[in-house]
Image (cartoon, rainbow, N blue to C red; front, side):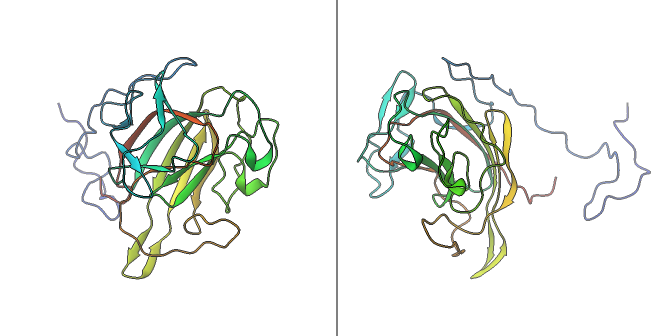
Length: 247
């Protein structure tokens, strides 16, 4: 039985025709399962799991490449204030990232001083982690902001202590030597709600300064921030992608 047609027009910029049955079939994967309040879900079968709740073997301290010194218990990792940021030993570029995080249940401080951490794609492009449930701060520094650049479309925060999810689609910037060919783009879904949609980043994350691109390799580690608060993380997996590849 023929899967498609061979007498249809050629699709622009490619080698396949409309409804071409000879085009490669999408790989079959196990999509995994969703998380619950008390239990992390199962990642997709083609994901690179960088934290499964049992060890920090896939991580190192960002400042000196020593073993990561955050606490691991009950299926999550928790920031140890003063231990420093941690990063994956493996480098990533274009990717789908899933992680879950929880701010401390005991509310302390306000503004940027409450449940502060950050998820840094390629170690330099930050999606803010912050407890903004009934807690205001400058908009481009609130929960799920692309720090210093774009506030989220909405505040989708759950209560302190409750598990929250980020699902992030990230397209790395493209450089030709020292020239920027295409900026990084990012989409963020927080707790099932789109909060950033295909945003073109202005460059790496800076504090109290404008951003600008500096050429860097096409892949770099994922970095999690120690901002001095007891933020927890669990169920972190990455699916490396190539958004510019021909399908």
